[in-house]
Structure formats: C-alpha cells, structure tokens
Image 1 (cartoon, rainbow, N blue to C red):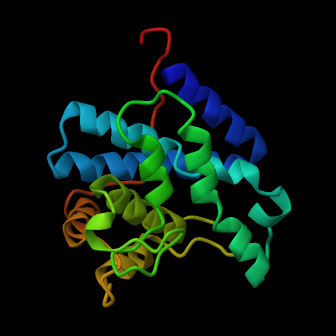
Image 2 (image 1 turned 90 degrees about the vertical axis):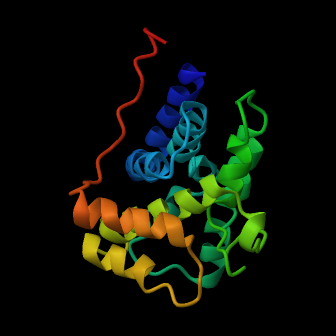
Length: 198
C-alpha cells in the first residue's frame, strides 16, 4: 500500500511539483488535528493517506491552468473543481482500507452546503474530510500560489476563526488554532514511510 501511495505522489510531483508539496504539508496538519481529536492508529493511517493524496485528481487538469499566474476565469475554475471527483474516481479503483476515496471526494465540501462537488451539508460530511478541508485552506492561504504570494499563517488562521457562515468544523478549527498559537506548530512536509521497512 505504501508503494502505491508513493507512486501516486511521484506521479503528481512530475505533473505539478507544487501540488505534491501542498499535499504533504496538508497531511502534516491534518494528522496533528486528528491526533488531538483522539483518532486511533487505524483512523490516523486513513487520515494520513487521504491527506497525502487529496489532490491526486489534479493530474487530470492541464498544467497551464494549475500554474496560471493570474486569476482563473469561471470556466477554468469550474475545471479545477472537478479534481475532487477525479481523485475519487482514481482512488476508488485501489484496494485501500476504509473510506479514503470518499474522504478525497468530500474534502472541498462545507458544513453550510456551499462547498463542492456535491454540496453536502453537516453530518453528510465525514470527520476526516472536515479536518482535511481546514488543513487544506490553512496551507493554501499561508503558502505561495502561482497567482499570488503567501499571505502568512495569521491570515490563514483568521479565515477559519472568522467563519461566520459555519463552513468549517468548530472542534477541528479550535484545535487547528491552538496548534499554531499555543503549541508552536509549523507547516512542514510529511515524511513518507520507508517502504523498505514496511
């Protein structure tokens, strides 16, 4: 299984090195939040694999859209939005444990129903996808993007802290904020497992 995960990461890294680094940083934060929420080892492994591969569907997108330096026009943004389902379609064909493909499918869903691709609401969204959504937003805002420089971690934390519409999971948000503000957490790329020892 680790060889499959590493092979998929290698594929996305060849296609878009930024996406691979983003996935690894999101995985580190997702795991930290999940640990604080009391996930058991099996649940943590599901969280890790889902986070490491959450944007694998972007391999389906043209690099000129992924790396576009300016703002996306609506038709380009609509193309970007298919990556969650594309990731689901890729991962559901692999004999992964648990619900990894479904977590990837849901990682852009919001509790208030404003997310995509299915507009899921509340309890329709699994806990792992709620965590992944927050980690994804925090990493994206605080890192350099092709179309803008990094905004910094405090801007990212303000985004989830000032969630007036209820898009994000409250418990996961509180834990995320505490990790950075009270525990000096830093966003780093997750270390992949040594598959020779697995």
